[in-house]
Every structure is written in C-alpha cells, then in structure tokens.
Amino acid sequence: MSHRKPYQLVSREWKKENTEFEVNGVIFGKDLVLIAGPCAIENREQIFTISEYLSKLNIRFIRGGAYKPRTSPYSFQGLKTEGLKLIREAADKYQLGVVSEVMSVDKIEELEEYVDILQVGTRNMQNYPLLKALGKSKKPVLLKRGMSSTIEEWLLAAEYIVSSGNERVILCERGIRTFENATRNTLDIAAIPLIKSLSHLPIILDPSQGTGIRDLVSPVSAAAIAAGADGLIIEVHNQPNEALSDGDQSLYLDQLKDLMPTLKQIAHIRNKHFDFENTLSFSPNLS
Ligand code: PEP
Ligand code: MN
Image (cartoon, rainbow, N blue to C red; front, side, top):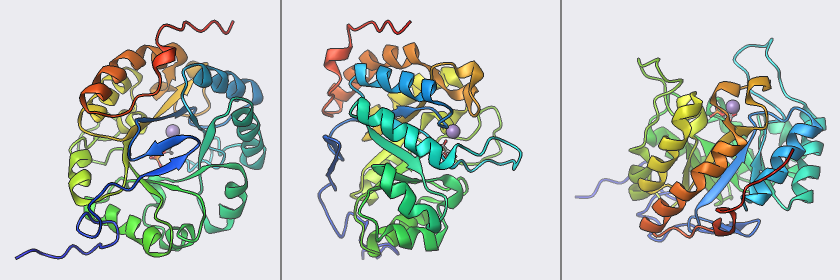
C-alpha cells in the first residue's frame, strides 16, 4: 500500500520528471547553477567589484541582501531600496541575474521590480501569507529550509507557493539547528538525495549559512554537487574582513575561482551541464 504524502503538487508522485525552468540563460533543474555574492549589499564599489569578478568566472547570478533578517535589531539591516538599485545596476552591467530576499508581503512588489529570483529566508519558511502571496508572483522563488523544519514541513511550505500558482520554486538546504555548535548550523547533505526522491523541484545548497566557516565552504560545496544538488548559493566578498555581515563565512574572490575546477570534475561525474569552462585558466587582475 502506498501512503499518500501530505504534499501533492511538489511530489514525485504527482510529476515524475524534474521541474526545469530557465532564468537568465541558465536552466534550473538541469544545469549546474552557481549563485554567488555578498551576504548584504553594502556599497557601490563592493557590489560592482564582485559583479565584475562573477561575470569573468561566467557565473550568471549575483546574490545580495537589501532587506536583511538580522538576529539583533542593532545589526546592519541592509541598504533597502538603495541597495536594490545598486545590485540591479551592477547586474545589468555584467549581465547577471539577481537573487535577493523578500521578508514581507508588502515588499514583494518592490523586490519584483529589481530582482530575478525572490529569496525566502530560513526565518520566513513558515510565513504562510508570504508563501501564498509569492504563489501569485511571476518570479521564481528560492525557498530556504527553515532552521528547525523537517523535510516534510519544508515541502509543505513549497506546496503553499505551488498551489497558489507559482511552480517555479527552488529549494535551498542551508543547515538546521542541532546540539552541535562547532558549526553555525548542521548541514543536512542527505536532504539533497532525499528531496530528489520525494520531489521534482530543483534543490541547491547554501554552504555559507550551512557552516558559518569560510574554510568549510569549498569542501562542502563539492559534497553537495556529488550528492546531486542542482547548484550552490555561496557568499563571497571582495573584502571579507570588512564585511558588514557574515564576513567569517564569506569566500575571498580567489577562493571562488579556485573552487571551479573541482566543481567541474564533480559536475561531469554527476552528468550536470557545467558552463564555466572558459574561466578555468583565467587569472583575474582587478587591482
Ligand atoms: C542569507 O542568505 O544571507 C540568509 C540570511 O540566509 P538564511 O535565511 O538561510 O539564514
Ligand atoms: Mn548571510
């Protein structure tokens, strides 16, 4: 007897083949997708320097928070509209797609004007009015796993978006809270093949929030692709030590470049289309 899952539209039972959709020339669910950028948009020089570097690596998406969900109300909250304008301008100059977080229903319209993919953060995974409203959006949604959420709760959150009309949902594993405090979160690599068996939606991994530690980001990125992830969202900064948020987990730009050959090899093994070839011998000089 087969037990019906509580979620339907997002399940493999409902739809056998992978959901694939194109954004900025990249096919989610098929290509290996790389999204990189700072935790937060901070200033013009930062966002343009990073954008130029990403474009030279042939990375097609920049991330960057304009509205930041910070644990402390006294921490940097983001540049808001000014930040969105900056990241859009830089992305247009370097032909990048933009990924940025939407924290509330009343900001959806503004975010839609500037970004290509709307990110729902871990703290909002169960914000049901937000999920339903994003179901009405024409933009794809990157849905982070709630830090205390089960796989089933996560897929039900995706079901809210899909059942409200938007099938373009990208799941993002970013680690969960456990007793372990040596890493910022406990990254659930097993979630990747598990989600692949339970759902047709693309799944990517965030090794930055997932570990909180810069030197763990590259090995864990490799592991995610090996486990079958459709991509990665990685925090990178031109000056991590000066970053206004999450500097300790942000790669240096050169570390991102150095990760490429490894990802290429693993993508090949996993039969994922890797479109960053022309970058491998490139040594950026952005002095
Ligand atoms: C982020 O991507 O910077 C972020 C805040 O992510 P999360 O919601 O997973 O903590
Ligand atoms: Mn961050």
